Image 1 (cartoon, one colour):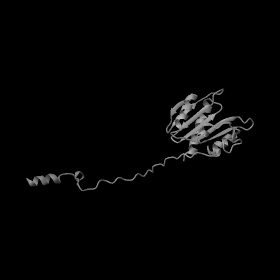
Image 2 (cartoon, helix red, strand yellow):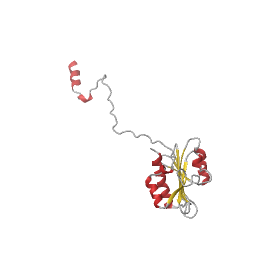
Image 3 (tube, rainbow, N blue to C red):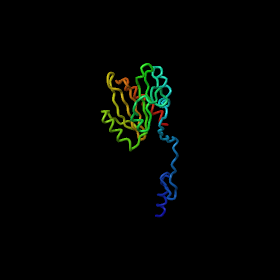
Length: 188
Protein backbone atom coordinates (compact mmCIF):
# COMPACT_ATOMS: atom_id res chain seq x y z
CA UNK A 1 0.00 0.00 0.00
CA UNK A 2 2.81 2.34 0.74
CA UNK A 3 4.13 1.72 -2.71
CA UNK A 4 0.97 3.05 -4.29
CA UNK A 5 1.17 6.33 -2.39
CA UNK A 6 4.74 6.90 -3.52
CA UNK A 7 3.82 6.11 -7.07
CA UNK A 8 0.97 8.63 -6.89
CA UNK A 9 3.34 11.37 -5.71
CA UNK A 10 5.82 10.78 -8.44
CA UNK A 11 3.13 11.27 -11.08
CA UNK A 12 2.69 14.97 -10.18
CA UNK A 13 4.04 17.54 -12.59
CA UNK A 14 7.10 19.41 -11.33
CA UNK A 15 5.42 22.79 -11.87
CA UNK A 16 2.67 21.87 -9.42
CA UNK A 17 5.09 21.00 -6.62
CA UNK A 18 5.48 23.63 -3.93
CA UNK A 19 7.90 23.87 -1.12
CA UNK A 20 6.69 25.62 2.02
CA UNK A 21 10.11 27.20 2.71
CA UNK A 22 10.52 28.83 -0.73
CA UNK A 23 10.82 32.65 -0.63
CA UNK A 24 8.04 34.64 -2.32
CA UNK A 25 8.80 35.94 -5.80
CA UNK A 26 10.64 39.23 -5.88
CA UNK A 27 8.80 41.95 -7.80
CA UNK A 28 10.81 43.50 -10.59
CA UNK A 29 11.43 47.25 -10.61
CA UNK A 30 9.47 49.30 -13.09
CA UNK A 31 11.55 50.62 -15.94
CA UNK A 32 9.15 53.56 -16.44
CA UNK A 33 10.23 56.45 -14.24
CA UNK A 34 7.52 58.13 -12.19
CA UNK A 35 7.19 61.72 -13.39
CA UNK A 36 8.01 64.38 -10.85
CA UNK A 37 5.00 66.51 -9.92
CA UNK A 38 5.06 69.95 -11.50
CA UNK A 39 5.77 72.83 -9.17
CA UNK A 40 4.18 76.28 -9.43
CA UNK A 41 6.55 79.25 -9.50
CA UNK A 42 4.90 82.66 -9.42
CA UNK A 43 6.39 84.92 -12.11
CA UNK A 44 7.80 88.31 -11.16
CA UNK A 45 8.26 89.76 -14.68
CA UNK A 46 5.89 89.94 -17.62
CA UNK A 47 8.68 88.79 -19.92
CA UNK A 48 8.51 85.31 -18.33
CA UNK A 49 4.74 84.89 -18.07
CA UNK A 50 4.42 83.57 -21.65
CA UNK A 51 6.96 81.98 -24.02
CA UNK A 52 9.12 84.12 -26.28
CA UNK A 53 7.11 82.96 -29.30
CA UNK A 54 3.98 84.59 -27.82
CA UNK A 55 5.89 87.80 -27.07
CA UNK A 56 7.09 87.87 -30.69
CA UNK A 57 3.50 87.36 -31.88
CA UNK A 58 2.32 90.26 -29.71
CA UNK A 59 5.03 92.43 -31.25
CA UNK A 60 4.01 91.39 -34.78
CA UNK A 61 0.42 92.38 -33.93
CA UNK A 62 1.65 95.81 -32.77
CA UNK A 63 1.08 95.10 -29.08
CA UNK A 64 3.47 96.47 -26.47
CA UNK A 65 3.64 95.81 -22.76
CA UNK A 66 1.77 98.76 -21.30
CA UNK A 67 1.30 97.69 -17.69
CA UNK A 68 2.83 95.34 -15.19
CA UNK A 69 6.41 94.56 -14.17
CA UNK A 70 8.69 95.70 -16.99
CA UNK A 71 5.86 97.56 -18.74
CA UNK A 72 5.79 101.08 -20.10
CA UNK A 73 3.54 102.11 -17.21
CA UNK A 74 4.08 99.92 -14.12
CA UNK A 75 0.93 101.51 -12.65
CA UNK A 76 -1.16 101.33 -15.83
CA UNK A 77 -4.30 100.69 -13.77
CA UNK A 78 -5.27 103.02 -10.96
CA UNK A 79 -6.09 100.13 -8.61
CA UNK A 80 -4.44 96.76 -8.18
CA UNK A 81 -6.07 93.88 -10.03
CA UNK A 82 -7.59 91.06 -7.95
CA UNK A 83 -4.61 88.90 -8.95
CA UNK A 84 -2.20 91.58 -7.72
CA UNK A 85 -4.20 91.85 -4.48
CA UNK A 86 -3.71 88.08 -4.10
CA UNK A 87 0.08 88.48 -4.38
CA UNK A 88 0.48 87.95 -8.13
CA UNK A 89 1.16 90.05 -11.20
CA UNK A 90 -0.92 91.38 -14.07
CA UNK A 91 0.60 92.13 -17.46
CA UNK A 92 -1.30 94.32 -19.91
CA UNK A 93 -0.47 94.38 -23.61
CA UNK A 94 -2.04 96.98 -25.87
CA UNK A 95 -1.52 99.06 -28.96
CA UNK A 96 1.33 101.56 -28.66
CA UNK A 97 -0.46 104.27 -30.63
CA UNK A 98 -3.66 104.28 -28.55
CA UNK A 99 -2.36 102.76 -25.29
CA UNK A 100 -5.65 100.86 -24.99
CA UNK A 101 -5.40 97.38 -23.52
CA UNK A 102 -5.92 94.36 -25.73
CA UNK A 103 -4.71 91.39 -23.66
CA UNK A 104 -4.35 91.12 -19.89
CA UNK A 105 -2.56 88.09 -18.46
CA UNK A 106 -2.36 87.57 -14.72
CA UNK A 107 -0.93 84.91 -12.44
CA UNK A 108 -1.32 84.70 -8.67
CA UNK A 109 -0.68 82.15 -5.95
CA UNK A 110 -3.80 80.49 -4.58
CA UNK A 111 -4.53 78.96 -1.20
CA UNK A 112 -7.46 77.42 0.58
CA UNK A 113 -7.92 80.70 2.44
CA UNK A 114 -8.13 82.89 -0.70
CA UNK A 115 -9.99 80.51 -3.01
CA UNK A 116 -13.57 80.95 -1.64
CA UNK A 117 -13.58 84.74 -2.10
CA UNK A 118 -12.15 84.42 -5.61
CA UNK A 119 -14.77 81.82 -6.60
CA UNK A 120 -17.50 84.00 -5.12
CA UNK A 121 -16.32 86.96 -7.24
CA UNK A 122 -16.51 84.78 -10.37
CA UNK A 123 -20.08 83.78 -9.51
CA UNK A 124 -20.97 87.47 -9.04
CA UNK A 125 -19.56 88.19 -12.52
CA UNK A 126 -21.73 85.46 -14.04
CA UNK A 127 -18.77 83.42 -15.30
CA UNK A 128 -19.37 79.84 -16.46
CA UNK A 129 -17.78 77.14 -14.30
CA UNK A 130 -16.25 73.98 -15.74
CA UNK A 131 -13.93 71.30 -14.43
CA UNK A 132 -10.59 70.89 -16.21
CA UNK A 133 -8.15 67.99 -16.00
CA UNK A 134 -6.39 69.54 -13.01
CA UNK A 135 -8.49 72.48 -11.84
CA UNK A 136 -11.59 74.57 -12.34
CA UNK A 137 -12.15 77.12 -15.10
CA UNK A 138 -14.40 80.17 -14.87
CA UNK A 139 -15.03 81.61 -18.30
CA UNK A 140 -16.97 83.96 -20.51
CA UNK A 141 -16.81 83.84 -24.30
CA UNK A 142 -17.83 87.45 -24.66
CA UNK A 143 -18.64 89.12 -27.96
CA UNK A 144 -17.10 91.50 -30.44
CA UNK A 145 -19.06 94.53 -29.25
CA UNK A 146 -19.39 94.58 -25.46
CA UNK A 147 -18.09 91.69 -23.37
CA UNK A 148 -14.46 90.51 -23.27
CA UNK A 149 -13.34 86.90 -23.54
CA UNK A 150 -12.32 85.75 -20.05
CA UNK A 151 -10.51 82.62 -18.87
CA UNK A 152 -9.71 82.03 -15.19
CA UNK A 153 -8.19 78.69 -14.22
CA UNK A 154 -7.85 77.83 -10.55
CA UNK A 155 -5.59 74.96 -9.54
CA UNK A 156 -4.58 73.90 -6.05
CA UNK A 157 -1.88 76.55 -5.76
CA UNK A 158 -2.37 78.99 -8.65
CA UNK A 159 -4.74 81.32 -10.43
CA UNK A 160 -4.13 82.03 -14.12
CA UNK A 161 -6.33 84.53 -15.93
CA UNK A 162 -6.45 85.83 -19.49
CA UNK A 163 -8.75 88.63 -20.62
CA UNK A 164 -9.08 89.56 -24.28
CA UNK A 165 -10.65 93.04 -24.52
CA UNK A 166 -12.56 92.06 -27.67
CA UNK A 167 -14.53 88.86 -27.02
CA UNK A 168 -16.11 86.33 -29.32
CA UNK A 169 -15.31 82.78 -30.41
CA UNK A 170 -11.92 83.51 -31.96
CA UNK A 171 -10.73 85.64 -29.03
CA UNK A 172 -11.95 83.04 -26.55
CA UNK A 173 -9.96 80.30 -28.30
CA UNK A 174 -6.90 82.56 -28.27
CA UNK A 175 -7.39 83.18 -24.52
CA UNK A 176 -7.55 79.41 -23.96
CA UNK A 177 -4.32 78.93 -25.89
CA UNK A 178 -2.57 81.72 -23.98
CA UNK A 179 -3.70 80.27 -20.63
CA UNK A 180 -2.14 76.94 -21.65
CA UNK A 181 1.11 78.73 -22.54
CA UNK A 182 1.09 80.54 -19.20
CA UNK A 183 0.60 77.20 -17.42
CA UNK A 184 3.68 75.80 -19.21
CA UNK A 185 5.66 78.88 -18.17
CA UNK A 186 4.77 78.82 -14.47
CA UNK A 187 4.71 75.05 -13.83
CA UNK A 188 8.03 73.25 -14.13
